Every structure is written in structure tokens, then in C-alpha cells.
Length: 346
Image (cartoon, rainbow, N blue to C red; front, side):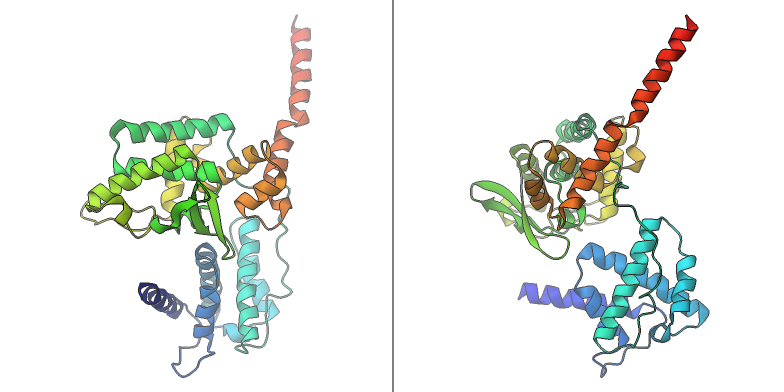
């Protein structure tokens, strides 16, 4: 019953969010396949992270339509091109926005809600797949980040410090996507075949498990124990999201952590650890670090399975990018030039 009511609440929230989008025709309760209910159905079938991104992309397109007085259901290729040329951000972001809105139109067409996809033939910025845009860490740098998080947790043993240390440890030890981790509940943690595991929903909606190594599981247990003490319930009776906010300045806490919380955490901890690129890190940096280290210690197919990549080339992207830096001829050239300079200076 609780699951059903929760699902209904999520659908209602999604419908309310779609209702706030501009330019679309008003919702008609008697029209099952109108633009707004179909848009809600399109979003509902996505993972939480993809849903947020697609909603933001669609909102930008519809805001453009509203500004120029364009009915999005009657838009043509020229309208889509006009929006594409004024997109800001990286080429990767622009390509994702165009793909997201194009996906929306395809879904509308499949429900006979509109007749054409104006983005079908729009040129998308090329994105090179041989370089990852994510800043990665060496094993030494990753260890320094985890040391800083552990030290903060050991100093006072506060619930927020233990939570933060557990969050970072799970990211670096398992390579799980931050969206999947933040979407996990307390009941997602359990045992299977003698292993401590985290059950989560991967990108694309696939159910997966990640092994929680001993130190990782121990940190998580310490956090959950501190949280249970605050909530005055036995640890085995905790419920709700796995990682939550704590009471602060009159706020009750208990809210699911956000991606922004996790990004700020890894940057703050990396800064405390003295890492030079602290301000450019993201939770995905931990995932990239995991894949790079895992590929040095396990077969490709096992690493691919562990991180849930559909294509092994995606897994190898992390390693290939790192190898291109480690083996760069720039080091040899710089060394030769430096040697020449020293010989001439004698």
C-alpha cells in the first residue's frame, strides 16, 4: 500500500511539474493523449537523473517557443535550428539537449500527439569519445581524499561526518553512479551469498548490486547507527533514503541528499586534502577513478559488469584517456629540451 501511494505521489508531482512548462496547450482532463499527459508519461519512464536533465532541456526549448510565439507542436526544422545556434555551454551539453528534445518529439509522434520531429535532421555538435571530460584522480590522490573524510569522521563521530565519509567511500570503492547511490534506500543495503551488498537501480532502469567491501560497510554501519540514535529507533528499524540531511537551524532533516550536496562534498574534502584540482571534481571523478584502478586489477568484462556499462568501449574510455596522459611524448620532449639546456649552460 505504501509503495502504491508513493508511486501515486510521484506521478502527481510529475504532472504538476509538467503543468508548469510553458508553450504547451492547457491540459484537458478528458484528453488522454494531450501534450501534457504524454509528456508526463515520457518523463516517468526515465531514471531520476535522466528525468531531471530531460525536463530542464525541454523547459529551455519550450521557453524559446513561448518567447517567439511558436506552437511547439507545429515547429519546423528551421525553428529547431534557430534554437540550436543560440544554445550555450559545452558541445557535449548542447548535443545532449538536442537529443533530449528530439526524444520528446519521437515519443509524442508515437502517441499521435504531433506529426513531425523538427529536431530529426538538426546537426548535433560532434563529441569526441576518446577523451573523458571528467577529472580523474591517481590512487594516491584518491587515498588522500578518503583519509581526509575518515579523519573528519574520527574526530567527533558526528552523523554528518560519518555520512560523508561513507558516501565518498562507497563512490570510490564501488564506482556506482551518484544518482543510483542517492536514490538508494536503507532497505537497499543487505547481504547476498556472504557479501554485503548495495542494491540499486542503474542508468536505464536495470536492477544491480554492488559489493560493499569491509571498510566501506563498516563506515556505513557507523553512520546508520548514529542516525538511528538520533531518530531514537533501533538501527534495524531505520527506513527511508539511505543518505539523508540532518537537522540544522530549525530544519528537521531526513531529506534525501542531492547531487549538488555530493559535488560540494567531494570538492570540499579534496580541498582539505590539498588536491590542486579540487574545484573541478565531481562525484563522477570517483567513478572514473574506480574504473581506472579496476582495469589495472581485473579483466575488462568484470569491470564493465561492475559499473553497468552497456558498451565495453565506454569502460575503456577511462583507461585510454589515462594512458594517453601517462605515455604522452611531451614528457620525453621536455626531458630532451631540459638536457640540452643544461649542456649549453655549462
